[in-house]
Length: 511
Ligand code: ATP
Image (cartoon, rainbow, N blue to C red; front, side, top):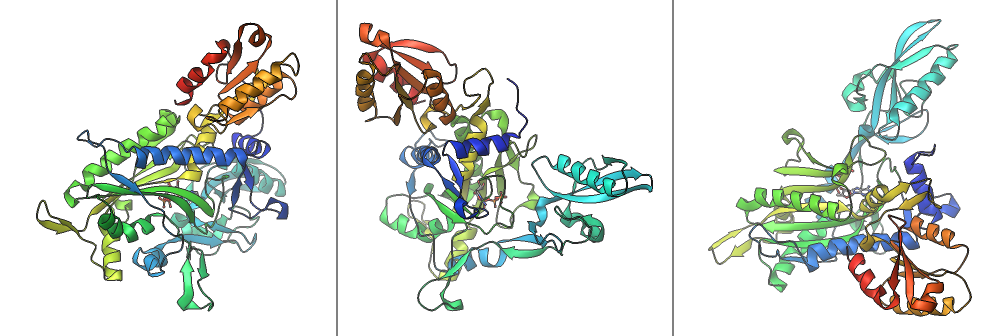
C-alpha cells in the first residue's frame, strides 16, 4: 500500500464529489463558503448514521447502571424559537468567538485558530526571527516553512528553521501583534485587535422588519428541548431520570468554516438532554461519556482514533460541573485530535434560566419522595454532519493492488448501498436471473443493478461507494443455482446457493 502525493483530505474531498457523497453548495455560482450539499450517496450515509443514533438512543435506549432500560423520548422542535430563548440561554450575550480581521488580505479569522510560529532566519544581511501566523491544523508547519522561504528569498536567500517547539496562540501573545504576520499577509502587524463576534444568524418574522420582529436561527438543537421539557413531562409517562432526544439542523455564522464539513455554517446535530435528580448528576455524566465512546466505536470508529478530552476545571463553562469532549484523530489534526461530540453536565442552569425568563415553574414534583426540584441535565451533543466526516475519514482506504485503489471500508449497516448485483455477461439468460434477484432483494436492501463494463470495473465502482457485497450471476448460476458473492474488505469471492443469498446477507448486513 503506497500513498499518493496529494493529502488525504484532498483525496477524500475529491472522492466525495466524484461519487456523489458531498458537493459544495451553490457550486455553479462559485460556491458559498461554509455550506455543503449531500449527494445521493452522502444523504444515504448521513441518514443511516442518524437512524443508528435514533435507534440506539430513542427506540432501544441503553441499559442504565441498574440493568434496566433507560427512558428516552424523541422530539422535533422549530429551528426558530421565541427570541427570549436565546437571551435566557446566554447565546445573545455570550455566544461569540473572538475574531480578528486582516487589514492587508481583508480576511477574517477566529483568533483561537491562528497559531503563531517563531521562525529563525539567517541571510547574508543578518540573522533574526519572524512570528508567522497560520491557521491551525492541516500541515501548519509546512505552510509556515513555505512562507518563511518566500520571505528569505526576498532578502536574497538564506536559511530558515522553526524555533518554537509549540506554536503560540494569537491572544496569548497579542502584546507582540506589531511583529506578527497574519495567515495570508506579506507584512507584519496587519491583524486587528480580537473582538467578539456573535455567531447567530438572524432574520425577521412577520411583515415588519425591526428589532421587535428579530428572530434567530438556532445555533444548537438543545434549547428547543428545554422549552418543551414540561410539556413532555405532562403528556407522557416519563419521569426523572429520563432523556429527550432531537436531531436537526443548526446554524452558526462561523468565522472560519473549514476542513471540509468539519466546521460549516449550516450543519446537523444529534443531541440528548438527560434529566435527573441533582444528586445523581455526576454519576450520569460518567455513564454517558462511557456510553457515547462505546457507541462511536460500534459505528466502526477505531478505539485508537478516539480520545476522551476531559475539560480542565478552570476551563469549564460557569454552569458546568464536568465536560468531556469525545475527540477524533482527523487527518488535519493528526497526530492530535479534534472534537466530535461534547458530553456536558450542565446542572440545572438551562431550566433555571428558562424558568426565570419565562416565569414558568419548571420544577419536577417527585411525589414518591415528597419533594420538588429543578432537574439537573447531562447532555451528549454530537454533530451528525461531523460524524459523517469521521465515518468517511475512518473508512477511507488506499490500496494500489485494487482496480479502484481508493475504497471505503464503511460498517455494512451504515453503507449507502448494501448490495451490487451484476450479470457476468449480458447474454445466456444471466441478465434475467440477475434482474429477478435484484427485484427480490431491493424490497429489503438498497441495491444497485449494474450490467455496464467489465466485472472488475463494476467491483471498483462499488468499492468506492463502500458497498460491502457484490453478487455476480455467472455461468454456474444457470447450471447449478449458485452465485458468486464478493466481499468488499477481503476482495475474496465465494459461491453461495441462490436460495441462501437472503440468509447470507441478513447475517452480515445487520452488523
Ligand atoms: P467547536 O469547539 O468545534 O466549535 P463546540 O464545542 O462549539 O464545537 P458544541 O456546541 O458542543 O460544539 O456542539 C456539539 C457538536 O456539534 C460538536 O461536537 C460538533 O460535532 C457539532 N458542531 C458544532 N459546531 C459545528 C459546525 N460549525 N460545523 C459542524 N459541526 C458542528
